[in-house]
Amino acid sequence: MKMSRKRFEELVSDGLDLVPEELLRLMDNVVVLVEDRPPPEDPDLLGVYEGYALTDRGSEYSGVLPDRITIFRRPILSICDTEEDVVDEVAITVVHEIAHHFGIDDKLLHELGWG
Image: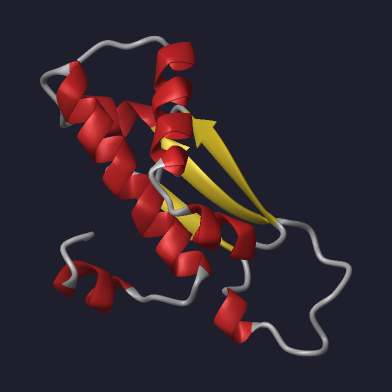
């Protein structure tokens, strides 16, 4: 599947729009980015959350750089056949990584159907 970076970024933004407003308001010190490729050691990675989940933050949490949610364009496009597939996969990946920000692990996400 081929898609411009601009269109892909629009779909990531649309994926963020699927998150309930109440949850978006609770997100703290986090940025969502799009990169073309994941790290070479994990070439099939669709997205990653890097930072301190809200559930892990204590009184010592201050003055840190924002957490990062990165969505990887090329791996997502490589597993999709249509733009509709990309829309679905981006939405799933965005929600999955935001869930990590809230302290939800992969096991529970898979049980809930967001794996």
